[in-house]
Amino acid sequence: MQKIKILSENLSNMIAAGEVVERPFSVVKELVENSIDAGSSRIDILIKEGGKRLVRIADNGSGMSRDDMLLSLERHATSKLGCADDLFNITTMGFRGEALASIASVSKMTIYSKEHGAVEGTELISEAGEIRDVRSAGLPGGTIVEVKNLFFNTPARKKFLKTTSTEMGHISDYVVRTALAFPAIAFSLHGDKGVVHDFPSGGSIEERVKLLFGRETAGQLLVVEEELPDLRISGFITPPTVQRSSASGLYLYVNGRFVRDKVMRHAMLQGYESFIMKGKYPLALLFLEMDPSAVDVNVHPAKSEVKFRDSTQVHDLTRLAVYRTLQKRQWLGSEEKESEGLTQNRAEDIKNAASDYMAESGSLDLRGGHTAHEESPAYGQKPSRADALPIKRVDTKREDEGSASYFSSLNVIGQAGEMYIICEGRDGLVLIDQHAAYERIAFETLKSGYVGKYFKSQNLLMPETVEVTPKEAAALEENLPDISRLGFEIEPFGGNSFIVSAVPAILGTRSVKTIIADMASELCEMGRSKAFASALDDILKRIACHSVVRGCRRMSHGEMRDLLRQMDSSGIVPHCPHGRPAHIDIKIAEIEKRFERA
Image 1 (tube, helix red, strand yellow):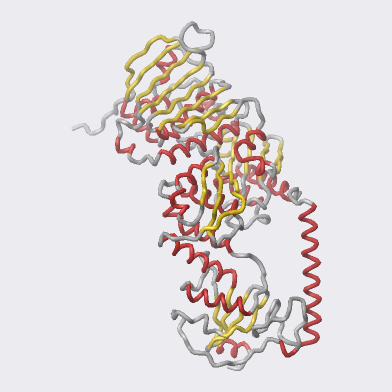
Image 2 (spheres, rainbow, N blue to C red):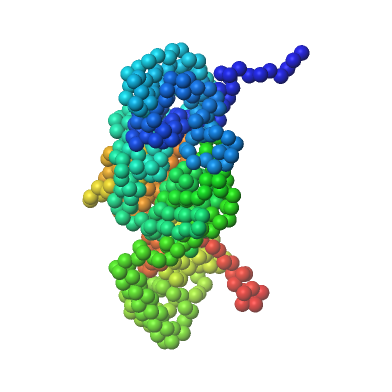
């Protein structure tokens, strides 16, 4: 019996749709690319229910004749390739000839189109890939494609779609990426709530960056420009002072096509290597221009990945361009340089004071140390020899770390380097990283408040306005009810802006814009409608980290004792939320071994 069969045309289109049409965003992407290739100067996008009910793309491009419209629904039918050589010299956004056929096979689609100069246009109606009607229609020049009830005939595929706001977020992000690459084209995006984006034509990339990311961020951008005889890279990057917790703010283009390319991304981050903290990302908008024959854009069904003929050259140029831009240190203003000089002078003063003290007392150098007495010497006053930090054995009650008063039972000796608290227990010394300990306490407090549905908020004296990327805005808005359980009061303020009127009390007024941006970035990176539950720990870690004063800080004896009590009451574990040790135990036996007494 014959087992191998030739699939029907409609089934073949549905299989192709599985590769090309993953979600409503895919429909928008394919149709907008066709509009760009048609020479449109204006593209209007209307979305209903995140694209599940309706995707409507209208352009003023070259349009199609009746015969071309009928052919456009056939697989592998395209006006953009003529021979095999053209496949390796792609100069258009679309070229596969599968988009319309694939989309039509899983939706109810209507196409209206008219060539410029033609007497009349054509209206075509299809359902599940089958043409139901074709008729003449009075239309303006250009093309309108309406895609209704996506995946209506494949309910299993429809179940995989996310919430309306999530799907709309993907579409909004795509429109932003495309608008940045084609400033000569006017784009508009309308959703269920009205206008989402409206970009006029004829502007520059700089003007679009201001519209999308706000004037404050745009004002900090650094210009990138580097070129070789057959390769050029240009665009904008943020200084190291602007950092994000995810890569959602990286916009990389090759010949106008947005790509998720590992070579360019790795090279760009290498350019930042000595300027930015590991695990942090900048905002970047980079355009790579090269000979189309030197890059293969046909390696991914969605055309989101490319393959370079000489990836080493691309990598080196990208890294060099970013590094040279940052090396100029354009972001350092005179005010910061003055502050830097004052800091260096202050460091010299401290160093000289410490040398005088050591010469007088001859005691162990515990930089930033304090005496174990309740009354500490005034800052800058030289302690007498009697005030030197005593290292002596005291009788302390032996308690296991799991008990409620382990840290409180420790004898505080002093502070080293203005970063570490030195304590004495029964078995030896306990060194506590004060930043890590405070961070862990803040993390546990926030988590208890979220789980127990109670929190302490602090109203801001002046509400802060925070701007994020369109995709991050969608993720943030979707999760606002859960975010409010942490003590934030955040409201949408139009476009990609939000108003923050209250924050968790533990955060105070520190880093409001940074923490909101980080939280939005974290939620966006998850890419799921229930991202908050999955991202909760990471979000709490970031809030906890921002709530703690960083760097060196002198602590009084009372503050150190209070920290130990908080460590007990919070049930602190041996590490901070990021995994660094919060305290280290040094046994007497180990000390004796180092002094060769063992």
